[in-house]
Image 1 (cartoon, rainbow, N blue to C red):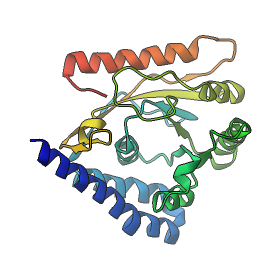
Image 2 (image 1 turned 135 degrees about the vertical axis):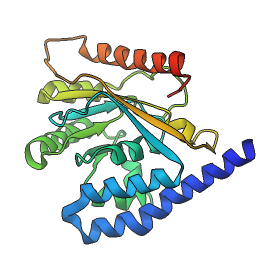
Image 3 (image 1 turned 90 degrees about the vertical axis):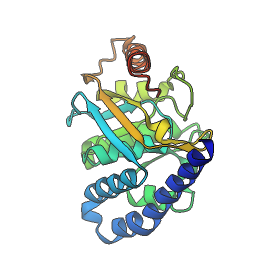
Image 4 (image 1 turned 45 degrees about the vertical axis):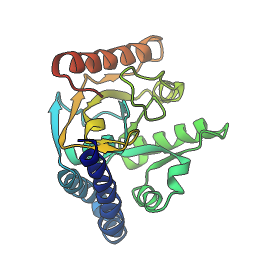
Amino acid sequence: MKIFATIRFYWGAFIISFNTAVFMIPALMLFGKHKSTIVHHINRLTLFMMGGKLAQEGTMDANADMYVMNHQGIVDIIGLEALQNNHLRWVAKKELFEAPWFGNLLRHGEMISLDRQNKTGLLKLIKDVKESKDLYHRPVAIFPEGTRTDKQPLLPFKKGSKIIAEKLELRVQPIVITGSKWVLNEHIKTGHSGTVKYEFLPSFSVKSDDENWFETLRKDMQKVIDDEFNNNHCSR
């Protein structure tokens, strides 16, 4: 019933906020050397308390420099952090760094801030990704759609991800996420118990002379999304 789904949404939102504010941020401040492990275990706890489970297909390439994913909501991030422990460095819009609680989480987690209103934002992003690769040795996680959507078709990918990958000659791995919107739908404010699936597609090294790689990547991800819906009745 819709009323129970609505109650589950607010329960999920509370759990995410509570665990972030009470457990994750203080732990990151006190035990900075173990950030990746802290984020991994607390997100596993959060997903469990929300009634979510994880499924994986394919293998995550630990040598990838950038992971590109479709995006439905915050459960995408929670689930991937719960699934692996590779110390990802997420790219998030600047406004999120200014938000209560989550802004502190992003800053203490040393995530990457993207100012989409600033003309120099792309230059800063290139610099930050290069530092992630060469200095911090942390892979970058990015949503090339640039925003959340509740639709099945992927939104057009922003060109920033393409420019960065080509300029820095990154190794890229696409990840297709399905089921997260069922666990927590931020558009219509409903929640359910369910499984979030992460399908890891083959990684590849970007060559600037392959002009079509970015569109091919998007088509490959869309095909997985469509197959998952048609064969398993699981939306993204």
